[in-house]
Image 1 (cartoon, rainbow, N blue to C red):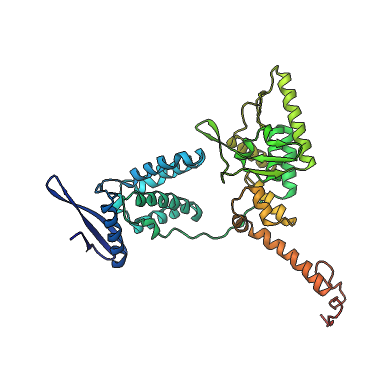
Image 2 (cartoon, helix red, strand yellow; image 1 turned 30 degrees about the horizontal axis):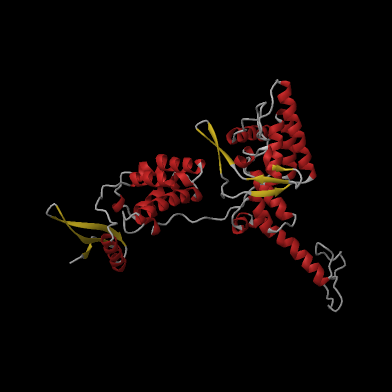
Length: 396
């Protein structure tokens, strides 16, 4: 008998496969399966294949915490420093205290659902809880691929659903007030606000900008890197989508960048130094060698907004750029490219409200073309609809 399925309670099974002898003793490889009997037999067939290929392990002492550490070490070379930092924070602060000691082969979907419920009870948003689920799912999926468990319990877990929320963006007048206030205290912050509102770039991408990224002839700004600060150490890495993009600039913004470059050179001369060969655009030091770090940028922006009584944060400048562009009639694919969204469906999902508002404008244009009404759809107070040739007029 090579394998057997044994019941272990309601919708719980143990599958065992004979794996030969070791030291004179029979060796079995077993797994616990939550689900139907059919699923248990599927798991048995998979375990048989793994045993025959020498890929299965009999070590049941591996804990969830140990697997999370192995997974994080495995993905670290291919992820940004910020992503690894956030994963590690979730793991150490929340996941390990709740699930870390659990044996990997004993972890159930019910335990995961209980963990998610506890997070929600603590006041975390559904989107935050789903980030924990993503981390667990990825780590457990890697355990399946490594032959440590037959199935991923996170596949059967039920993280909270997402409700569509409307992103908020500051009004044009508020952005202008923020720029004016920043110019009085920090011209670098003022330029960062302008760049964020016009290009839609993330704060880390703005902080990583160097003068070599400005193409003066083609009027383009290349966004190819993002700056991250961890434990006081700043490092450059790829953008969130791991893609570079070129963002068009107009004459006014190019003029501002020209002035910033001149001011930077003048400041270096005043303190008796010179700029490095490829300085950062947003640099607080005379040589331009050190960047404005993201958290400092956020802090300066927050304090300026608070002083003006404007409830906003720096990332909302990105929303401002997107909603303003869509409201002006820009197509979604162009906006997605400007924001650095790898898939335009992300733009559609996040900024659906702006598209709905644009759709109302389209409705007026089409109605005007078909019915002959003036833009805005009114009847001019005549009590009759203004109609085009060949369309019969009726009383309103």
